[in-house]
Image (tube, helix red, strand yellow):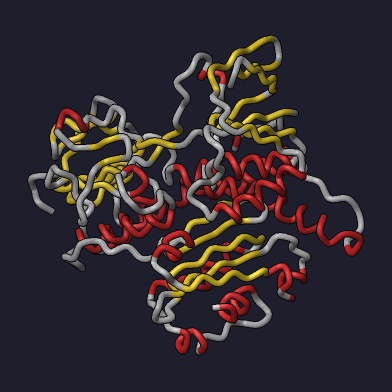
Length: 444
C-alpha cells in the first residue's frame, strides 16, 4: 500500500457490486476498505432477491398443489405470519456472514454514510475521514417515488417485504419486476390485488406473448389490471386510502405499493463537488468501469449501462474490478450473456438476443409448446412455452421461456449461448435424466 493513503481501494456500498470482488481482492494483498451506511450486503440479500424468493417459495408450492388436484389430499394455504418468520430466518444472518467474509479476507468494514471531500478522500457521517488511491462507487438503486400529492402515503418494496399482516386489498402502482412479483405473492396469500399501469404494457422488457399468458392467468385468479391509469394523487380517510386517477376516478384500497421503478442512489455522495458525471440512468463509466475522474470507478446497479440492472451483472462487474485492481487483467470489461427472470408464477426467463431482434436479423425462430412435453406434464403445468433463436450458422443465440421451471431451463442453456455452440456441439451435451436441464438441451 502506498503510505500516502489509508487504503489502496475503497468501496462505497457493500452490495453485490462490492463484496463479490472486494473479498478476493483483499486476499491478493490489496488493502481494501468498505463503507456501508446500512446492512452489509445491500439490497439483494437484505431487502430484495433473497427475501422475495423465500416469500415466493410457498406460492410456487401452493400453485403446484392446486394443479395436482386430488392426487394430494387436504387444502394447502399460506400462513403469512409464518412465511414472514421464515423469511427473517433466511436473511437475518446474511449481514454478519458477509461482514465476516470481507473481514476474514483482510478487508476493513466501516459503518456510516460516505461523502466525497475530494477525489481521494471521503468523510464518514461528516466526521471521520479516510483516503484511498482508488475509490469505487457501488451504492446501487433506491425506490422511485411518484411526484404527486400524498406520495408519502404509499409504501416501497422494503415495506412490503416486512408486512407483518397482509392487507385485505393491496394496490400496486407499476407493472415491472417488483409490481408483478409482489402481485403474484399477495394474490396467492389471499389479498385482493389491483395493479395500476402507467401505459398498456406489463413487463415491457420481456417477450410480450409470454407476458400476456402470465397476466391472463393472474386475471383469472382475481388480480385487476388498470391500464393507462394516470395516477394523480393519494388521500387517506379513516382506515383506508383513495387513489385518484384517470378521468376523475377514485379507487379505495387498504395499502398502496409504489412500484414505479428504482433510480440510481447518488444523493448526498458529493459527486457534483468532485465533478463525477452522472445522469438519471446512473454514474457514467467507460469500458473499464472508470468514471471521468481517473481514480474513481463504479460498479453494480448505480452505473449507467446497457446491461440489465440485475445481480448477475453487478457480480460480474465486481469480479472484473477485482481482476483489474489486482493486475490480473488490463483489458476492458467484456460482459457475458446476462440472463434475466421475473419470479411470477409461472416465471418468465430469457437470455441472449430477443425474439424481435432475431426476427429483424432473419434468424431461425423456433417455438415449443412445452405443456405437451412429458416432463412438464409431470407437475401438470398449463402454461409452458419456449422460444429459441438460432443464427444463420446454427448457433443458439437467444432463448426465452415461460414456465414454472423457466429459470432452470435458461441456466442450462447459458453455456451454449455464451460460447456459441453449434448444433453438433450441443448434441454432445447430455444432461441428467429426468431433469429440466436434460429437457432444455434436448430442445436446443
